[in-house]
Length: 295
Image (cartoon, rainbow, N blue to C red; front, side, top):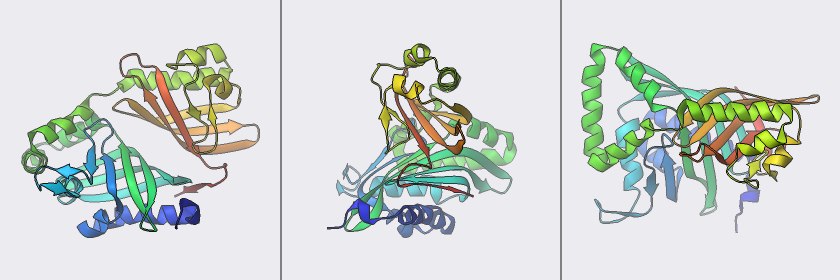
């Protein structure tokens, strides 16, 4: 029996890198083959997820039709280039700190800052993508499109019709759910986390969390701390490139503790009503099994 322990960080990263290669080549079958039989795509996080392997009403059976419709809606009509700044591999998780450039038509090009989280699994003795979570903000992308002026009218009309054809009214409405997020208020909560952590203010840090035992993966896959234990770690955390997608704020993170310095990515899941933190995961190099590859 093949287990996850038999796959290296290089194996995980190699699988993930096949995704942008297939996207750039518009190789539909190569892209679909990367995913597990049951899969979950959140792109962007906050929109209705695309769940593969479950019963599909259109086809009448369990299939990858949801994933296929995602491909035809968002990948097939566009030229997409990945500009990766950093890859972090932690167990079967791969995090990419990047921006993507989408050419929708001549004169209509958008650049989207993003954090990607790939959760991998082992299926039929091979690595596959179980979950793809793309953390990016829909409003800024739409503003870039609008800035393109008249060329965007034709592209926007075609995009809307294509989405309705492949996703239907409910699917289109589900995508637009990404317009609602924890926004700037959520980002401020994350900056407060850094402020209180750096000050060693345990009481103030704990008040940011929904419960005193809310888990803080510090880093993910290695240690799970309480907020109080996290505050006792010491060092200085700085966040930049904060992105609010749904109820999650992702951020590029710079962490210094003593003579050690590392870069990574953090994900903060918030209660959308109260803006309290219900889960936090940090990804960076330094733990056993972690690999940080900077572009």
